[in-house]
Image (tube, rainbow, N blue to C red; front, side):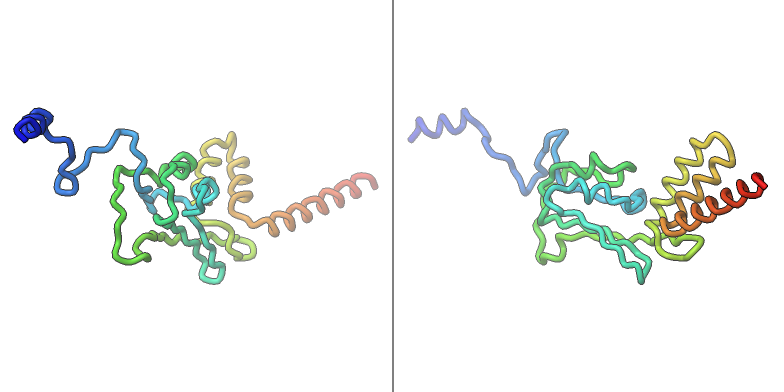
Length: 181
């Protein structure tokens, strides 16, 4: 018995004081994904990258909203969402304690408004996504005309773009016929 006690005292503490003291995690520990709705543009890159489909987006055209949601019960903490996000709006935290009293508490949601096409008024994409792309294209435009063309292409729905292109082609055809006379 004394031999055992001597061995115990020589070894010291072999366990952590968790949960009474915080548990140190590794620097690259992949914990709970934290979503920052302010910097999120609702582009759905994280939903495409998520292997277990823990992240989803639902678009309600009637309400003009897009709802982003993550189910921590399905999440495998792989970090693909963090890699795919173009704005860094989702990042893995060192938090690993996900115990909740209700299953609904394992889901986090964020609602984004949709931008409407200026021609027909139909919902196009998330307003923040349109603004993000427009900002990038405007800054990279070589001329004001190119910037205006980018603005038209980004903020107009595909049906209105087709209609505009058909009208342009018809106008070009009429101009050519007038030149040939």
